[in-house]
Structure formats: structure tokens, C-alpha cells
Image (cartoon, rainbow, N blue to C red):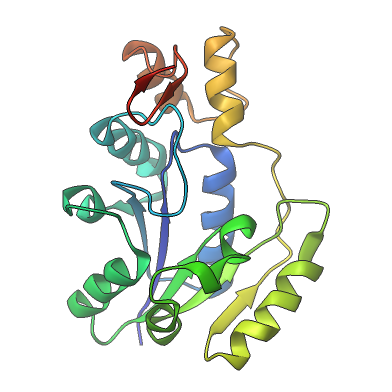
Amino acid sequence: MRKIAVMGGTFNPIHNGHLHLVRRFQQIIGADRVLLIPTGTPPHKIAPNLAPARDRLEMCRLAVLPDGFEVSDMEIRRTGPSYTSDTLRAVKRENPDAELFFITGEDMFLTLHDWHEPEVIYSLATVCSAPRSSRGCSALRSYAERAVKNGAKTMICDIQYLPISSTIVRDAVRRGEDLLDYVPTAVADYIYHHHLYLEEQNESGII
């Protein structure tokens, strides 16, 4: 059976931490295909300074080009909130014979029970996560045990954490700092050339 690893997120912007996580999980899972899916309208959080969807999509494409990973615009094309359950349904519909693995960060994994249709997510994919805080794997494994009792399939891996976040990248842009410690060169060039993240914004405009 083919294995497909799916990673969703705002990718605002995509950074080396995202890439490290998905590369390691590809190796651990033995995924035949890796699919990154930038969100259109994030349902779980207010996204400050959210770059236009077309820019986030293109930065993802540039970032994963050396790896041969795929990037999908399915959530961006979808109207309304970007729900993971809908996305996994669509991926499974297109790949009925594949085994799906959904990769998410620590913070989002620990709120799985609050997601839209968590039972659908559990039925369609193994949910994979790794620590990104001092709590390490203990909090993730404890939560995973409870999720398994509710029908989830989980995979928790103690992958080395890179202390990078999209917020750190955006702040570095506004301070005029070099971005090459945080993002691939192609992504840094795209941010500079398109003047992204120079002003703090909320979803409705500039604060």
C-alpha cells in the first residue's frame, strides 16, 4: 500500500522547521509521496499578518522544490474555513488505496479534540507529531493515549526541534535581519522581492 504524508498549515511563511519536520517524518514513515497544503482561511486561530494565499502557496513550492514534495492549492480554492477533515476526505477520495499520515505540530496536536470532525480525521489518517517545547514527548504521548481511546491512530516521534517559527521569521523581516538561518534562500528572496511582512497586520488590515 502506498503511503502519503500530508502536512497542512498557514505556512506564513514556510520555514526550515517545517521542512525539517516533514523530511524526518517522510523517512520514518517511508512515505512514497509528500503533500503540503497551505490553508486558505484558518479555522483554529486568528492569523496575524497573513500573507496572500498565492504568495504562501508559491513560497511552499519554492521551499520543497529540491525535495520533490508536492504542494496543493485545494484549501485555498475552497470557500470558507479550511477544515482538515474535508482535506483528508479529498486526498483519500483521490487516493483510495493509499494509507494517509497527517503531520502536525505539537500545539495543534494537543487540541485535536477541538478540531472540526476529529472522528473523521482519526478514521482517515494516522496523526503524526513531534515536540517543539520543553515539555518534550511526554505531553504528546499522554494526549495520544487519550486520543487512541477515542479511535485515533497516532505516531509521536522525538525529532530534534529547530527553534524557528513563522512569527520569528516575520519579526526578522521587519527588523531587516538576514533570513537565511530561518528559511531557504528561494523563500527569503521571494519575501524580499514581494515586500512581504513589512507591516504588522490582522485579518482585516493593518493595525
